[in-house]
Length: 268
Image 1 (cartoon, rainbow, N blue to C red):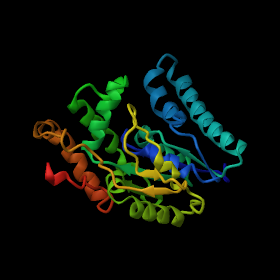
Image 2: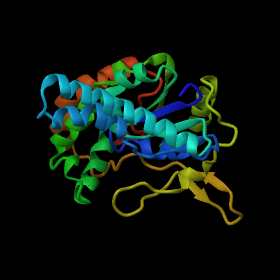
Image 3: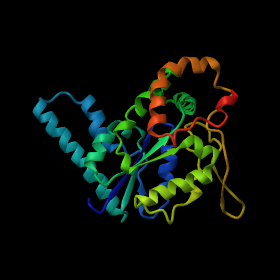
Image 4: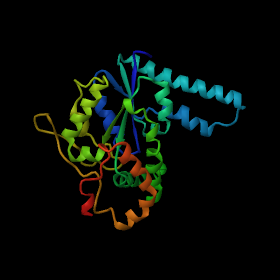
């Protein structure tokens, strides 16, 4: 395990975790497991679903389940001769303290996205059959609020934040700065490929991508909207402002350089 370094890409669902994980997975030294989920299941889901055994046996089971999740991820990484594995389960943010203790060498990438874009994207996820995404705007706002409320549990010295909204506005600059900060923490960045930004990870029909493949096979980067300002009504803002305000202020304080409002937020 000493030779394997986990990279946990976490944040609110629909905040760009899959995209950033796919980008990191273009390195030959990093295996992208996508939303692996084994740590989240072992530490969070199982403790809320399995309550039948006596307390002693239950705690023993949970401990073994957590150890198995660690062994499984490390073994699968070693099988492909990688030195890093990437898990982009967004809800891992809920167990950030557990992950930081379990993996003292782990690196955390926090994807930050303004609540407007997350709520709109969750609406599309719900329409695509994902019931967990919330049926109403306030329910989706509560998802954004609850997941990001765990951000203070991250080990800040090992955390690299990245703004999805800024990525959409200034992709090349944002990626360059992101890669530089990863390199400082020792993450291999020399062979990362921008091709990952050419794929849409939307839950419904494909949407505009930051990366565009040219006729000669090169990847160009373009700015795209991070939310649909024409669909974000004043009534929508009124529905969510009281829900998100405390968490948004917390993110602004913790990550003043990385939490951004959409570029055309003031033009609504």
